[in-house]
Length: 108
Image (cartoon, rainbow, N blue to C red; front, top):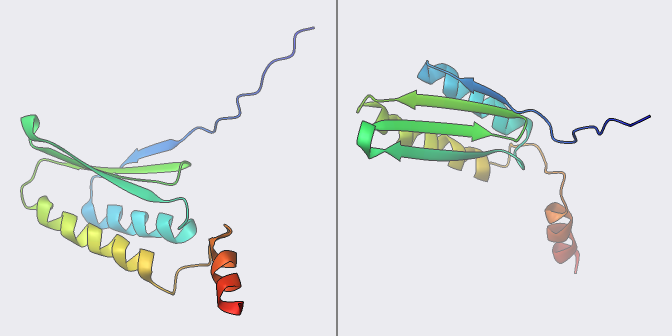
């Protein structure tokens, strides 16, 4: 009998969110749930004046797409949110060794 190989890669759920406020809230919740894995990408296509924001943690992928010029100002709000979350002490502790390394340096 031939054994079926299990696909070890996980499927990423990709969701386009049409409402800006819902996108911001979902992106913030995703970042808070896994701050070490979450990242975002901003893509602007000049040929069709389309701005796409993508937030992912490799399990969930949130996207917001717009052609409205006023939404470019919202990009600044989005960047400020992620900078605030990235530098805030209120975010949950990370699960990687970076925190251990920092603590080891302090104890020397």
